[in-house]
Every structure is written in structure tokens, then in C-alpha cells.
Image 1 (cartoon, rainbow, N blue to C red):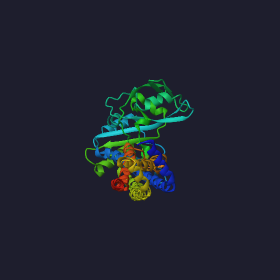
Image 2 (tube, rainbow, N blue to C red):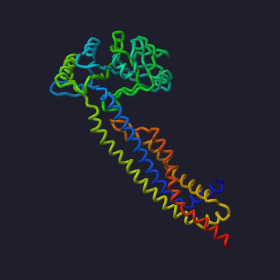
Image 3 (cartoon, one colour):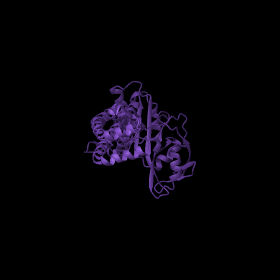
Length: 405
């Protein structure tokens, strides 16, 4: 297409700017709803898949509540921290196959920009390392860290004003004991500890240590915020009496201060997450319906607009304009009209989709949405151009009449 054709396109858009402005606003709303619906649907599916991993492996998550006199049971501020002997006893329990245990605390550090950042410090047993971190030969002298977090910590860690921690580049010292860094694999998934996604243990935001006699200095030097306990069974569930004996054993280790029970993560997620998913998904369906209406509307409007230009196009066709160039001119005009609201819709969704996050899962932008962002405007433009340019076959008649004259 020549520069003349592009000038003609902008001239036509300036002439019909009020009509185009309404279409732009409608398309911005449609694209925003569609992209938000796609992102929400994928986010929900990924979270549901992550939650089902433990269930497929027959792994159960425990929850605990502290007991207080005259107040029933409530979630306690403290956690039932197990010592090494108690942990070994549970690991060799005859009723279960595996026992996964981790203690979680935080390490706060000062950055060069004088801001306070923090990472999770997770002290876990060997079964936890093997299953969730893919480390079979775990050692007490290592600090296990992901390749994503290591350069960030190396670049940003300046000092730890609230904790006894020193960073030496290739090692870190906590409570006076030095640990060499050992990099984990890159494809680790978050460890689900609840149906609340914010309580996940995210390997990209945590450093891991083996809970061992050699690392008692860690447990004694940090305040443990919560303990995560999971167990694996040979079948889908333990029978009621066996489960009760297992919970009583845990309660004995906790000096009777806690009440243990199984946390039904998937059921709670479906109860709350599906309701939210349904409401936000309606945005997507509303966007698709509105989108179809707008496609028909744009096609009709362009038919009317092009009919107004019919005389001008006929003159251009007689003077050498080809049907291909006429088609491309319409295509470029529609593509420009559709691409702008698509870009605006993308920016709006990326900016505001965090406001639609729930306690069950966050809504993020995904590569598939980027593919839709690129292909959908092109497909829409092609459909509208085909519908609105169906009159081009009449141009041959115009040239034939001109020759007769």
C-alpha cells in the first residue's frame, strides 16, 4: 500500500471520528472482559491442578488449632514444633508411608535502596526435600536456593538488621553457622499448605535447610511462625481409628495443647474458589457475547461507510486502483480500529486484574492470552473486511460500463 492510501485511511477516520470513538470504547470493554476471563480461567485451572497433585499421590495435609480454657478451640499464634526425636518417631510410623515436615520463619534484610525485604526460611526433613524439592542426598551444611532467587539475594542483600545473618556471596551465615549455597532445579512448584495461595511455600521466595541435629542452631535462633505437616498413605485415606491414633500421637508430642485434624484443601477450594471463578468467568462470557454483537455492528457500519465512498472508489478503480488494493485499504482501516482497543484492553487488564485476586488464587497474564491478543484482532479484521467489502465485485461492472461509453 502506498502513502496515499494511508493518508486516505486517516482522512476517512477523521471524517467519521464520532462513530469510530464509540466503536473504540465498545471494543475496549469487550477486549478487557475477554482477556480478564481467559486469565481467570487459566489461573483457576492451574491452581486446581496444583492442589490435585497431593491428592493424586495420596498425600494429606494436617491443620492444628490451639486449645484455651473457656474459649473452645481457635487457631493459635504458636505452632507445634517437633524436635528431632519426635520427628524420627513420626517418620517411622507404621500407619503411614511418609511424613513431610517443615518449619517456616522469615529472614528480613536491608537492600542498597534502604528498603526491607524478606525471604522465607524453611527447615524441612529429608522426605520433604526428596518429594517437593527433588533433592535425594540432602546435607545439613547446605543452604538450598533456586537459581532465580540466588542472584537477587546476592545483588540485594546488604545487611540483616533484625536477624543474625551475614551474606558472603557464595555462602550465608545464620546464628553464627555458615552454609554453602546449593542451587535447586528451576521447575519447582509451590508447596501447598492451605487453600489460601498466600500460605504456599514458594521455592522462588524461600531458602531451605535440613532439619537435623547439626542445625539446631537455626531452630533456636529464629521464631517459628508455622509448621507444615503432611503424610502419605498407601491408599486414599486412613481408616477412622488409625487416623485417630495417629492424631493422638501428634497431640502427645504437642503436650496436648493442639487439636489436629485433616485439612480438606480441595473441598474448601471448590467451595470458595469455584464461586469466585463463576462470577469472574461471567465477565469473559459477557465479553464474548458483546464481541459478537460488535463484530456484526462494525460490519454493518463499514458497509454504510463504504457505500458513502462508493463514488470515490469507483473513480479510483477506473484510474487504476485494483480490487486487492481496495481490499487492503479497508483491511488496514479496520485493523487500526481494532488494534488500538485491543492494546488498551490488555493494558487495562494487566493494571487491574490484581484487584480481582481472591484468597484462593491470583489472576495473572499468561502466554496463551498473549497469543489471543495477537490473533484475535487480525481474525476480527479479516471477517469484518470480507463482509463489508463484498461489493467489490461490482467494480468490474463499473469499468465495463466505462469502456462502453
